[in-house]
Image 1 (cartoon, rainbow, N blue to C red):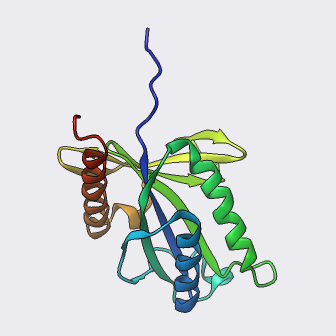
Image 2 (cartoon, rainbow, N blue to C red):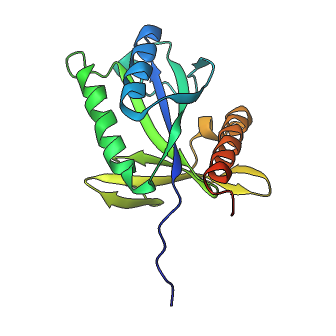
Image 3 (cartoon, helix red, strand yellow):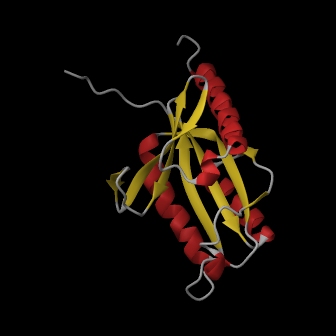
Length: 179
């Protein structure tokens, strides 16, 4: 029989993209007021893996990833996704989004994203939100899966996520020095 244990806290990450660079900065500041100080912000990344969002959001699209210094319980991912949906809605222009915000987390074993869309590999959490297992940690680094979005599977992005995971591991060791 398995015995339930409380999960370790996880590192909150967020992907943002928009055709408006200043809006990215505005929302990063807003998220920092809600979730605390960031300890990593990616360089600006040209988001060119798909033109899916062009009609709604314009072109070109620019992306930033951020990670937060404070660790969170993994079960709060649902509340984070619902809150980021509210922020997206606050910046709507008519019915079109001006910004896309995708939260997730990094833990030792995986990178998980939150989504409102069901699919074969996604696990329902609560309140219309699913967990999307995006990357797994294996043999010293994150590895994409068959369904991983191409931009998350990019080796440069994986390097970024591995660095965030290393920072997270250091945080866990500092919080629990006896482990």
